[in-house]
Length: 383
Ligand SMILES: *Cc1c(COP(=O)(O)O)cnc(C)c1O
Image: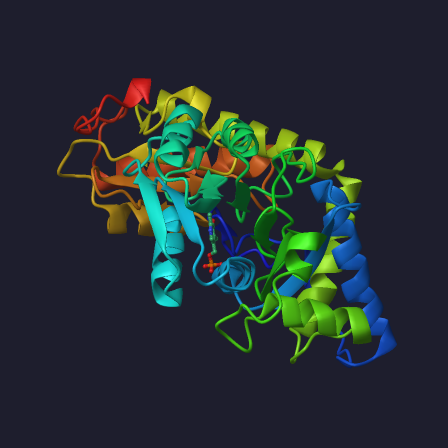
């Protein structure tokens, strides 16, 4: 990274290592055996991380993460089958929007901006709506940073005999999941989040039996996950042009993930990043949206201080001038901003971003500790 390049404290795209970037300095033939073996190795490694090597298959899909979510929902959900969507933020809502576009029937439990969907309410909804065949949940709802209780929800789904589909976009690679044990019928993630690759493709880890039975169900030619899988099984190739450089960089990223200690190593570093950030900003008077038990090690939402001196754009620019890009808030109820903990960020960068935020406060004329936020309409401590 050149000295002037800012660190991205955003939940993907994120700051990648120099070696991941260097892995893109080579041109690959998309039909060539060398490239096919890169694809095969990536899929094998992803399956291993997911715990699904014996039961699931991994299918990559060109595009951003949403393309992979849409491909998975459109392929594995039969056209007339009803889905229960658990929403507590923008990404859960997006799943509903995709199902709307696909014309697939669904019901939703919408917990608003940041309250977690709980097992007992999912159990009630499944009992009241026996036609539901699958439940979709977001693992880490990146719009608030909340870590949803997927274990609890998986237990309820298993008991009720429903399939569970997880959007683990911003969690997989840093938070432990085992798709065979949960169990989870399909898990979707992408290259540019916790594995620290560059953006360009997503992937789904799907029960082999479920995907085998999903032929002809997809609404789309290019997003047909079953077709992509069959073609890849047969030829070793992606169906249409793959993002070759992105795929090559991702293999390097996966090697670095392994060298760091896999999911455990990454979770340790991200948790440390989050702890340093939260402690540092609390010392400056900032408050987190969520109580500690719901804070993910991925991204944290801080409430805006109640002061006319706090203008997000000026705050953002002052922090950017010091070498860090933060993220605007995505809440409907309260003014906020978000700071990510993922990517090539270590103790040194987290300490430096706290310093940059302290300096930005001074530049904006905010006294430190900053004034408390306007209380959000709900009791934030007891979510
Ligand atoms: C990043 C993300 C996505 C996908 O977003 P894209 O912009 O399409 O890559 C989906 N769900 C969650 C929870 C995410 O964090």
